[in-house]
Amino acid sequence: AVVRDEHRHPWMASALDVLLAARPDTVVVEMGVPRAEARGALHLATHGAARVCGRAAAEAIAGV
Image 1 (cartoon, one colour):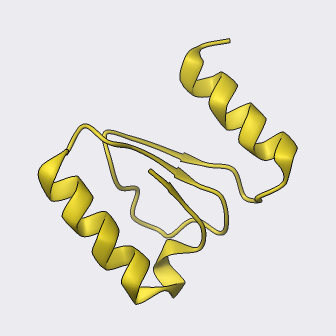
Image 2 (cartoon, rainbow, N blue to C red):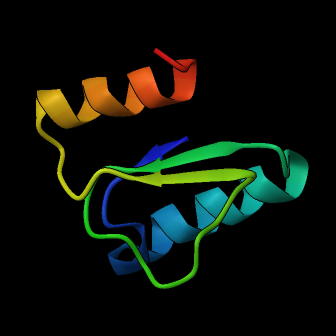
């Protein structure tokens, strides 16, 4: 799941709650400011939504 500033948007937090309840093995990529509590089987915070941040996240997940 890719989120951005999830802690600032109640609808996004609720959607992520539902997803994580159904799939606790979900990889969560936070493309904005991360919250204090990491969520998901793997939580990756990029601290930005630039293209290079997304690519770095994808490479980290893929093990490249």
